[in-house]
Image 1: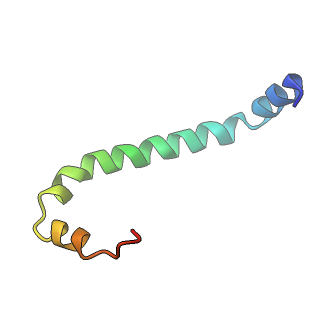
Image 2 (image 1 turned 90 degrees about the horizontal axis):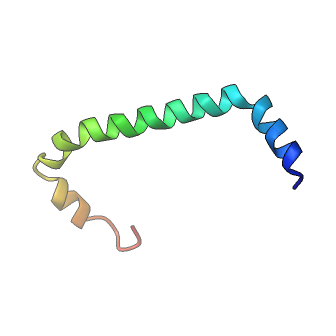
Length: 55
């Protein structure tokens, strides 16, 4: 791929790229914030052990 076209495409799609990045960061922060409360919930280990082998 031509590098000029690649960087032109990135410049054109800058806003959507920034919005996707912000959404992914927000999702990761939400998971990090909620993990301690989920980890200490009784029954989570049992639920995970009851999942099918394929998972």
